[in-house]
Amino acid sequence: MILGIELLADRFKLAQFQTAGGGLSLVKAHVEVFGTDDGSLAQRLAAALESEGFAKAPVLACLPRQVVTVRIIELPSTDPAEIADMVHLQMGKQTPYSEEEIVSDYRILGAGREGYSRVMLAIVQRTVLRHHYHTIESAGLTVARMSVSSEGILNWYRRAGNRPSGDAADVLLDVDAGSADVTVMAGGMPVFSRGILIGAEALAGGDDAPKAQLCQEAQRCLETCRAEAADLTVGKILLTGAGPKVAGLSGLLKEKLGVDVEARDAVAELVTAGERPEDSGTASFTALAGMAAAPEDLAFNLIPGSVTLRRSLTRKAKGLTLFGILLMAVLVSASVYTSVRMSFKQARLNALQARYRATEADAREVERRHDLVKLVNRRRDARFAALTLLSELHNRLPPELALEEIVLDVERDAGQVRLAGNAAERTDVSALVRNLEASALLQNVQTEGTTSRDRETGRYAFRVTASLEE
Image 1 (cartoon, rainbow, N blue to C red):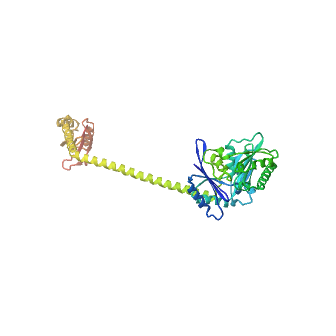
Image 2 (cartoon, rainbow, N blue to C red):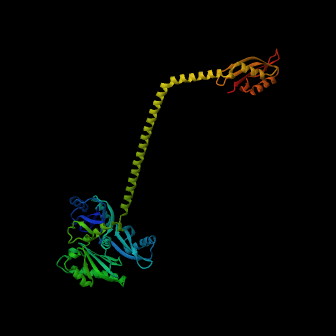
Image 3 (cartoon, rainbow, N blue to C red):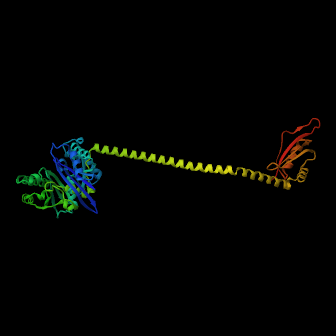
């Protein structure tokens, strides 16, 4: 859905289009005339939108040709970056206003001479542009694009399949209620554009003077165009908008300019279905229909800097808000996930603890019985037999060493043997330790305490411990 709006000095036009299946359908159209004392234009626009049932779709706004300075120039470059710099320099030469007082945009039309590019400039005073934006936005609408009526007419010309015959140029003369738009097309590109402050309302009367004046202004346009391109030949005039409804205008143009005139219903050529615009006898919907038929081909977007800044800040604020919402959602999700996970873990831990408590007594009993079995098995092992151990000790005992105590402790995990006695020399104790270490039945042989000499007997008392070999 597309809503086209064009604000003029004494009226506004509304046209709602529907694009479907590659065609363009006119849903509804409205023209309303107002005076300077009729109150707020924004209120009248909002009331018309409400009463006529227009959808508040993205708006394609159209600036009338008479409030915009349009220039078509050739620039000696085909590089878009260089063209942008050249256009910036040209802006100051094409208007008497300072750079701070205007808003401008441009459209690259195509290649001119070799190494040159033809460019269409659009320049509008900032105050005029702000008035249009403020009026439309105060009516509760959002402007998606602000173009110029000349670009909409150019879209119609190309969309309707018009092609100049041979080297001859076409002159597009779109007549609106209070003005007319003249565009000269050569080789499929506009080479000249001008607005004329004579419209269908002045031409519709019985006086032929306005018609003659319009023909004169059109003739001046052609002369200006020929001054810039001496070899320009005009093939025909395409009369659109309200022009074909003005009695005798086509014949007078042909007579005065010496060029064939072809009356065209531009809206009917683009609109495949829907209503007909009301008040079509004085108002032209050519520009709005051309913009709606090919919005992707529109290059002009005359937006005030304040609007651009506001929209940028709004987008950033929305982005930050969305980011904050997403961050909070992630944090809440993570918190819920962690809580659920901890709940499951706690429930599992409680279940395991309950099972542990239920089986603890049985487990301890099994462990006790297991230790008892191990003890019985050790005591049944031949290595723990006293005769085997005594025989091994006897074989390992040095001659000058006497044992006073032999203790076999099989309650320990590996089993332990403790020996106590006396020796004639300290070296005998060391020899005992070495002999026991060499035994296949013992391991970890070591002395306990210090080896001390008894004063009465002169012998050395000792204590030795060893573990039974696994």
